[in-house]
Length: 342
Image 1 (tube, rainbow, N blue to C red):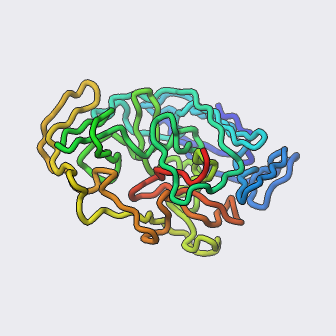
Image 2: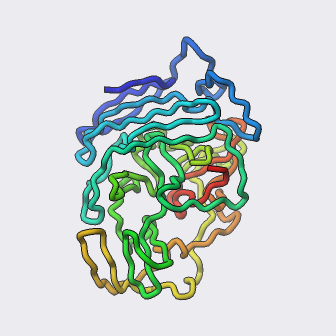
Image 3: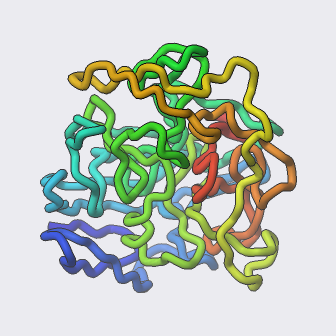
């Protein structure tokens, strides 16, 4: 059962598992309403943004209900994007609309559950913080994908100076990364995602099968919206940010591993407090650089993106240019800070 109210019509077919939704997108003409030059439906209500940017009219008429027959899901994925006044509104249930890994699994004992997702994003985002404002804590979601699944790049895992580490609600000042190393295993799947104890499936990195679902694995793909109202793209962008005719390439972050670890950084995993039910082990194994957030440093101009893993440039949806965030293959994988108000 699928409800369609967007300007796009999707044709689904099953592949691999009982459910493997693939999208084939084609543009249809609307009897009522006008279209912008980038093919998105204009808001019925004209939005006059006082600032430099407006996202009005872009993906504000999506209404989807798709049954996900994956063995770890067996539920409907529902999400609706609309607009009212100066805001973009999301209502959904956080269920992914694509294949996922096996949950529960030995390193992630949690089951995917439907949740109530109700969020509001400004249609008139503004750049307020030159270096970005760090976003931390589960109550401060940094972004949501189009399917209402949350982007949550950090983890609750911590280590203390003695190398005593916990993957859930740990203590200590060394923040464990979910991706980019083999020391700690959070049970993430092929979408760089796993499940919180609440049942919330969430992305830590590139949502591979969501991109496939949206139908463009090699071009600029808008996959969601950050809490400050700016768009989120996955992996690719124009090689010249201001030129839409330039080749598309995988964009590179401007972070690198530090040449030397910070003072008092633990080098050995002396004790690992597992997720509930796993108990404590004493591996006494090395903790290589890259396991902690603190192992990385930002070098302006090293890559294509700024300290918030974003940049200003033109995109298919915004041919006049906009600031946008990028989900990348390398650290920080997704922004840990926001440039606008949220």
